Amino acid sequence: MNVPVTRRNAVLGITAAAASLATPSILRAQSAGRIVVVGGGFGGAACARALKRAGADLQVTLIEPNKVFTSCPFSNEVIAGLRKMETQHFGYGKLAAEGIAVVAQAATTIDTQKRSVTTADGTAFAYDRLVLSPGIDFHVEALPGYDEAASEKMPHAWKAGAQTLLLRKQLEAMEDGGTVAIAIPANPSRCPPAPYERASLIAHYLKTNKPRSKVLILDAKDNFSQQRLFEKAWKELYGDMIERIALSQGGRVTSVDPATMTIVTEFGNYTPDVANVIPPQRAGRVAEIAGAADATGWCPIDPVSFESKLAPNIHVIGDACLGGGIPKSASAASGQGKACAAAIVALLAGRTPEPPRLTGICYNIVAPGYGFSLAGNYQPKGDIFAEVEGGATSPLEAPRELRVREAAEAERWFEAITAECFG
Amino acid sequence: MAALINVPAKARRGDVIEIRALTSHIMETGFRHTVDGKLVPRDIITSFTCRYNGAEIFRADLFPAIAANPYLSFFTVAKESGKLEFEWIGDNGYSSTASASITVE
Image 1 (tube, each protein chain N blue to C red):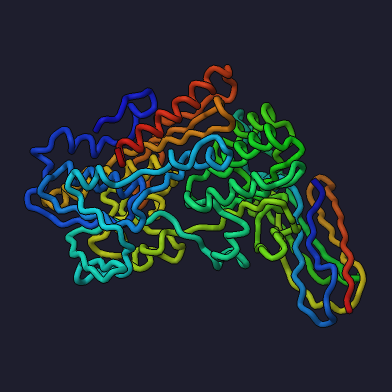
Image 2 (image 1 turned 30 degrees about the vertical axis):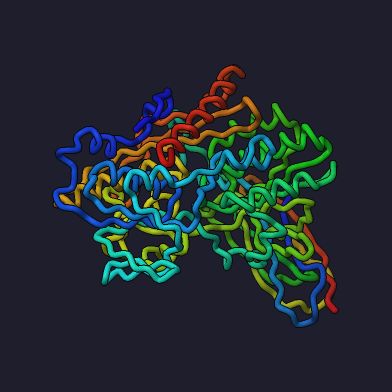
């Protein structure tokens, strides 16, 4: 792995996978195995790569309908006009060159008895072990009025790509003096601090271009990750430009009406000029197809091996799994992908997987040159991952110098994780 | 923050309407201790009442297990135009009221 060692990623939780790479002769699969990975995001790409590198004789297939991956991390910068969309795009060429069979198709059916995945074009892929890394889908029933058509008027921009650009376009078209509303769902959801980073960067765009405008956060939560750091930065940088209505102030969104651009909360109606509606979420659809999702819509797993508690020979990683204390993030997904690969190698060799130690790192950029972070360590405890000591959050009181440095570190983290997964 | 009330402004006679009420309150249980071992005294809302044109249509007793900022949602039948009045009563002489109008056609 050619990951540049920075202060942050030096502690990245890749212990399990790193151990397997350091001692390939011991951990290399005793017999060849067929592994299919569904989903080519940070989790799936990291897992496929780690598997192939741990055992050249393993047959690794990565099934992902998109030919190009679009990264959610740093897409808030695209929305704010600070970054070009092209810098969010990553291909699978390097993975294919390493001997991973990359299939640009959607997985449509999974037969857990025959251990076979079928793609949209009708091809069947047999597996010994299946890894699902399907990310998220939206719980449309949980937000009346919000469907695919609504997302064209009230973009979620919670899966990076066309939605990211649509929200950008709407912000550009909005007149000075307008209101941008951001509807935030309750947890569990993808990247819990990201809506607040988005609010910050949208405020930055408005402050520099449309200074009479406002950001209105309608929140289904009372408290959120790194709240004090965010609120301090908002006051410092944006004055009263960002208004937040929390759960206990009636901020939970209960329905939307795209025809009238209305957002309905438990205690009021809002008609903003731009509506960024982030709906409640669940595991990506393929998890349900495989029978790996429970009534919550997410996938319970054994945190040591990432094996599904509901479907045999299936492992679930990334946003889709119920990880307990680990926030759903790119960093967690890639760490889980590598740890899952190590577990699969052990299982194929008839050994018991070692409990992994994972680290999640999350950077937030609230303005150019102003960043802070949260790093946490996690280990299996019962059915979930529990946070263990060694985590760190940026200090609340800090010289601006540190915020500048952390913003630069965030960029290096992004370069490192994308190089590790796709480069 | 004052109480939050959500009552439909208009309804047809006989409609079943949802009423929502939320008030900011610490709801201190009376079971917690400070770091130096002193008991944090109980401070909760003990009672909530809703009256529709003077007649009580909903009442709830609240206890220490109820979380901060109690949020109540209940239903009634829209019978006539008029006023809905809400009252919260609690420890240490706490009292708070709110009201909302409804037009029934």
